[in-house]
Image 1: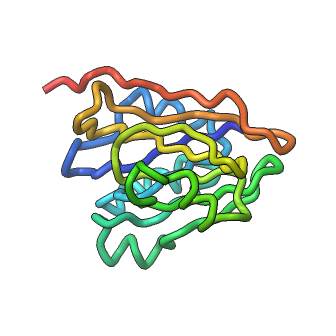
Image 2 (image 1 turned 30 degrees about the vertical axis):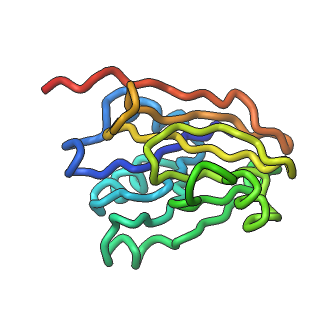
Length: 168
């Protein structure tokens, strides 16, 4: 099962649309995760019409329309793994232990908010993944997203994709 992980798209404030390289990934994904801060409902509508399945949550910058359509925390069982999606996990120091305690029944937690890519594993085995942002790199050198595969209870091929700079 091929997974596509996104967060913090902030459309249309940080960009007018999702990058073309990311859009070409959509048909190849069995599931798209979005860890919040969509900002507009058009992006959710786009993903829901182009993707087989979307597992998403709202973030701190998402208004009432998105909060009506999306949960604060989402869960999905895929490829023999238990996934969770949340926007914020708090500060980086202590993140693994804090998330392992808060989500003891998960194998993978996808999160966003910081726009900083993250891939770590807690002592309990919980894998934490933040795909960064495909539209707002903030202090990062590149805009990013992630792909992975989930099969037979294993997460594999986790890859952070760097997007080319946007043209002005």
